Length: 536
Image 1: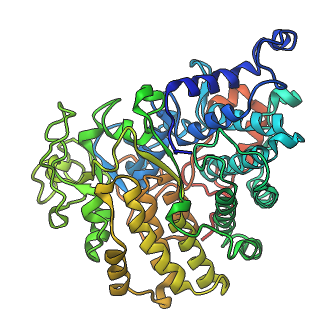
Image 2: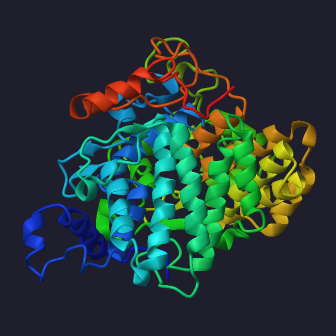
Image 3: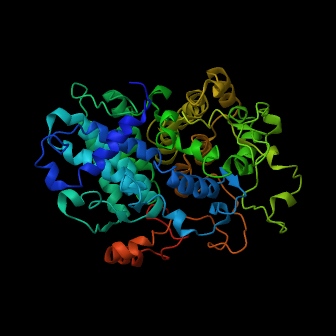
């Protein structure tokens, strides 16, 4: 199955299905002509959940705020001088840090964000397909998807509603308790392990799957690679559990870039189906096209080793003025001229803050933008890749002495992190020969192996525009070593944030459970407190 969403029709069906299971309950259980849990095809709802995981239908607001404004700049992948880009200034905008969690009502889906647009539909799929042999594989895929969705939510916020989440309709739990992150992770590991093992190549084909078209062998490798990522998140806080789950997946993870999971945008449906990151960075909602650049930390890293990715993912002079969103056909991809923008700057004329006062400043177009190959409305949102899997195996091999050769996994991971770029666009392709030459020139060194592995992981996830994962893995490992910015009035005493505070709306709508969760956070519900697995 081609990894694409052909039109808005399928998505609208999905959205109607998601809401239809909850509204007018008596009517749909007495009128056989309408959808109900017994007669609708849950494959449509799987598509909706996968689309939701790529970003909200409402102009990707949580993508804009959580992935780009905060995660991307905190981790020094991107930089922006727009005033409301608060991430690399370490300022707290509670609306933005709450955006990924989600907001109720106000849209055709009954809400935007992870809980309404991801948790709710995938829980519907899981509940409706349970104990139904004709949906055996779809049920297991929904378990894997739900676990992946919750990994990101808990990585961002810590203790969150999990066991009670999304089951209000089925179990009348309308005020979900917050589960401890440790308990969530133990459940996620168990869910993914069991679901992956239960996938049956002779069973049903999940026709709503836009990652793999229901290919069960690919889903098995995906499940094992996801399990690896989850296990390695615990490498410091619970190394025994991490090691035990890594040992379960050795030899069964992704085997090449053909196993990469991604969702392809479709511009025909407008902002409902177009690629989420691209909508924002093309300036659909503001002037991000002109004022958002690659960070100088990232560009300088690529330049320091003559990394061939630099000439594929970065260009200068892509946009020449803030007023025009027409891309310059003469944009310059020459690696020698690429120039990252410092983080923590703005458009003021205040010394040490204003970008125009920076030494060597010659104009915003001279800073490197993500290349046009990465910014396409029909572009791909990469979910999980072979390169990530190999680099995580390299980390496990170096850290725990398991999973084979750290050097071999490192080599495979770095090569794949380069060659996969052709899946964005043929213009971004890097050949095997070029990738081999790079790793030959920069061989693995066990003496600083963990730093090499996880700095490459950072570079990879930055190129994926998956800054959620860049930030999470940095918090787990401490690599790359980043120098925090100093911005007046910051909320973290000049340190890089470690988690998102809870949405203040929870205080009014789920008061007791919210208060219990807040009271149990060491350091309080602030940007600088740490989630359970984030240990020094």
